[in-house]
Each structure stands twice: as C-alpha cells, then as structure tokens.
Image 1 (cartoon, rainbow, N blue to C red):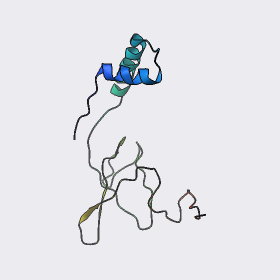
Image 2 (cartoon, one colour):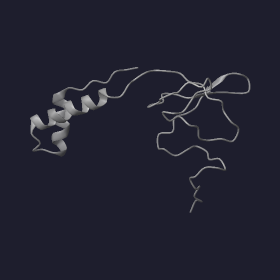
Image 3 (cartoon, helix red, strand yellow):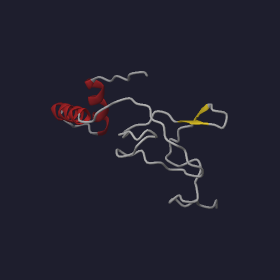
Length: 116
C-alpha cells in the first residue's frame, strides 16, 4: 500500500484557494483537531468470511455484524471482496465507486428506474 504524504504548507495553500483570507493559525488549529479526531478511531487489518446466501444482495457488516465464525467484525473500511465460485476458486468482486449496486435482488429497497 502506498502512503500519500502532504505537507502543512500544501494543506494551507489548498485551503487558501477556497478561503484566501483564512489565517494560518486557524488552519493549523483545524489540522490539529482533525488529527486528534482521526486518532480516536481504532485501525486494524483483518480478514473475515461470510456465508453467501443465494439471491441476497446485502449483508450486515456493521460494528455488530459477525463473520462466519461468530466474531464481531467492527469494519470501517473494506479494501476488497472475493467470492468463492463453484470450482472453489476465489473471484475478486469489482468495487462500485458511484454507490450504485451492480445488480438488485427482489428485496432491495432501491427502485430500479426504467430508461427514458
């Protein structure tokens, strides 16, 4: 995984593109507050296995969600999803970036709109 780095001067420059009169001390204070806030979240890497149910699109991956072994997941970011096919091979599922599911099942709350 590549680490992205940015300097405080670059952040100040970017903020001032939108708010040209923002005082530097105020921007640095906001940066410090955000770092403190980020530090309150635990970060851990883990793998989890869920049992896939035929024709089910959505699964509970909330803080109280449990994996196939009954362990609480506590997920706050998913990096990849693989699913086992009928031959026992794992196939990587593409990431949907626009928030729209690739398919819907009959129990989906979202309505599928007809094309105009």
